[in-house]
Image 1: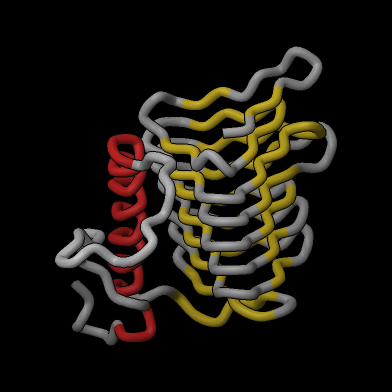
Image 2: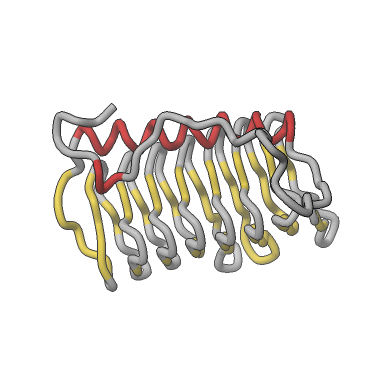
Length: 203
């Protein structure tokens, strides 16, 4: 993984976390245990501090940055979808940030809340605990349902397990010219898209 010290400040990564080789860490970045950071993610601690607590996942092509002198914080088991941009915000424990969302300076996402995909959360906005916000600008639409909370928790567990699987088996390789007869496939996991989850049907 590209990891760069800046002015003597070196990123810190717990040995139980997986950082994809194409993700980049710069300066004042601290990543706790059991985290997953996906391909192309950029965690740039050159102005403010970035703190990723235990069990989080920051998926492909996410950007985490901060305003000078401020902290960008992901609380334990925060779940950040592909392509999201987090700038100088606080994401509480067990919260989910949807794909391609943007969170601006001073945003606080309280514990176990969800920001819907492609939402823009304006500076200083507070997302209340266990609520869903969507839109551009984002607005609170309703409390989260129990089955949505279980779905989110299951997805976060899958990424914690993915980190361990990647640490154990991800290796750079040359691609094959053709599929192997009866070649291996990636093991399936127990998961379903959120739109297929109905009240009473969640696993």
